[in-house]
Length: 503
Image (cartoon, rainbow, N blue to C red; front, side):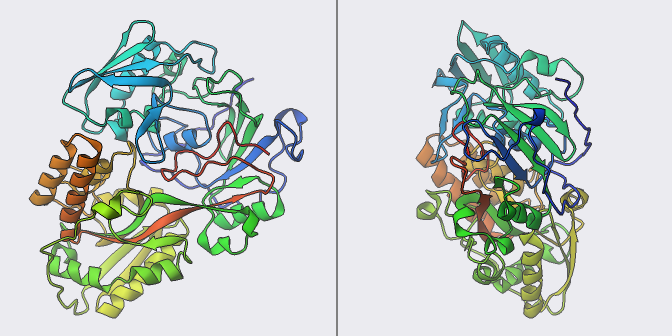
């Protein structure tokens, strides 16, 4: 089959949104004339509506990596289990040979192009990831070297000790692809070159067709394929579940949850937190007393009740309830500044509309800040038109949703990227020596429990600055046909369809 891939160029790290798609009816006919509405037949195709389209031609090195893993296309050497620990994937086991050297033993597996997964192929794939520009987020600040070691081994050596390397290699951005994926110029092509249970066969801007990969090492998937549509409009996704036009709709807006039959509504905790980031470098919030005024003005419980309609928990910190160990280890921030009177101080608050709950959250926050004495101008844009300005400090405050265990599953990762002087996604533009010291100490800590304790100490140091005000810890809401079984809703939002997903 000839594969058609529409180019969608984007300089941004996160997914750009597709134009509004008001209706999905009639969009899910299966390839080859086979109807995809054949009830509960074994091997039926799954019709899936996703909220975001591929922004980087399905490159595994950027935001599209998670899209690939959610559709069951790619996988890495490891995965994350329910407690956030590394578990086997393409590597069936591993051991630490020294502070800087790990040896991974591969399982017998085959790429979707029929080539065997060998140590040399895996080493080459990891090496290519280290040379990607920009580097995958999971490798930020990390230097590693991968080499084949015998018939089944891959030895990974890091420049400095990396106690979370097995977790790091679970990142969707470090998926292992066959040698043919790297033949062309630019980013690797995952079409027909991955190892997951489903293989991409065709991509057109607003849709993708995937067929079952029968030689998958984990067993033959029960669904014969996936017909995916990328649909920005959450109302359209929810409507399509109600009318039976699709089987699975991810990211159902909370405003639409009540319109779905309870039997089709699926919920799960997520490590995603919606927060208010305050620009600490320029503008009014350079003053810690005005940041304290903003923090004390926020009532997160009313946001959870009014905006999320109960499908969230009030903001407790950077880590929420889905990070199961966080609450028992949380440290109360000490030494916070006293709040000053805003006295009509003018601020610009920005957010994006790719996630439908964010503009409504921003409106509530605007009202709360204005009640406290601020004068607030609200800007709402599509994320792709907003990110560069946010990173450049063009706004005084920014509301966004962020996965607290992003990229690696390591709790320290988000702290380094979002709140240190050299952080690559530091929307608060925070540069505080005490924070940098606490994050560095956490990053150098070995042992699971000890690392968690250090991460919570660093969280307290960050919250003390009032650079970030946690608003809500979100839940996943999906619409799933009553005919479908085996949808995978994990808190890291890396999976959706697996080998056991069927209808």
